[in-house]
Length: 278
Ligand SMILES: NC(=O)c1ccc[n+]([C@@H]2O[C@H](COP(=O)([O-])OP(=O)(O)OC[C@H]3O[C@@H](n4cnc5c(N)ncnc54)[C@H](OP(=O)(O)O)[C@@H]3O)[C@@H](O)[C@H]2O)c1
Image (cartoon, rainbow, N blue to C red; front, side, top):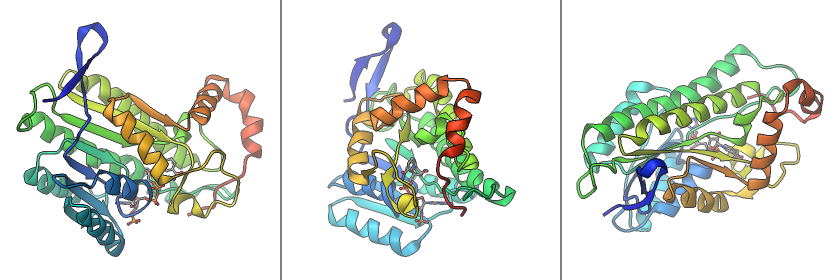
């Protein structure tokens, strides 16, 4: 039986405490890998994707060793038919409780501007890749209630955005734009899907120690390891939070900065270090 807390105006919002069938994109590394390993347990079904076959399979093997049943595949999230086919396979194997659209790439300007090619590549993976994951998942969740769950509890979607979604940073314009797009898309979806019994949570991490950040030559304030990030994310997902932004001090700061007129903060942002180009 699902657990419920009271939503606004007496609506019941399911608490997604114990997902048993979970799809995670970008599970071959970093946050996705740490999430997969943390959810892996006997009785749990995990559908995992990455691009690197060896790393994806090694994460799958580690999850199987923890007792989970795993379907793993190398799937390009930016390829809509490929993503839909994988979702279909996973959902047919065990109707999905939780889908985490996590796969993403990043690159910056290195202070030399950003090419159109790089901007398009980032937007394709980080925006289209998320849409390619979430849209078919929602269709399947809406199609029929999951066995053993109340009709008002059709599943949960988690979209991994970033604290970079709150303001365009000169060092990584397309990356910030991509994260802003999926953050806002997720917020809208949440309101829409609430009435259909689907929870949507937007995850906005600050700096996390992963392949994505290992090449950064600048100081990354309040950086944390992926295991700590996963604890925060899982807590937020279990409470069906609208947004999981962390660490809270950085989350607070970016919200404050975003509330100021951009012209006031431009001089500060121009001086910030720039991430290297991809
Ligand atoms: N690390 C941070 O500080 C931080 C902060 C805020 C938000 N995030 C977000 O968190 C998410 C995970 O990033 P991470 O830090 O864990 O980085 P990561 O270690 O580089 O992992 C990224 C994952 O995404 C996969 N991926 C990339 N492009 C893909 C594509 N086209 N199709 C399918 N999978 C693809 C990668 O697969 P392969 O490795 O197999 O290529 C990898 O599994 C990203 O969306 C990122 O933007 C990260």
